[in-house]
Image (cartoon, rainbow, N blue to C red):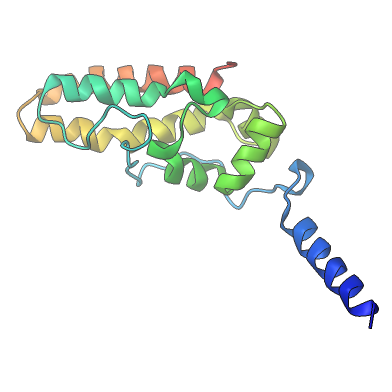
Length: 166
């Protein structure tokens, strides 16, 4: 009957090792192309953005949310953009952590690892914030002519974030 605890221990060990992801196991289910049909959550974590554009300061908060928070390391706090990252990169949240924390890759290096153009990630992230900028037009905060300026400000912050080396 001493064999049962040994078998149980081996089963637990087998389950634990099968649930662990190493960077060699990570493959993408995405194409790496620009996605323009998603809206990021843009809120949560340390994001200063509250989800509504009722004033210019809300747009400033959106720009700040695009840059993220440095205290979270290379990921810069991904909760506001997590769904978009997962869709564009085609990997899970846990796999992002393996690549970024265990392997020390920034988002551009993650793209390179997956065989994607990092600029496509920048454009996807930017596009995911454009609905909020458009909300500023709808709510009378900015004019349609100002959309390009705010979009470029968001793009600049996402570019810094994707290529940031910590």
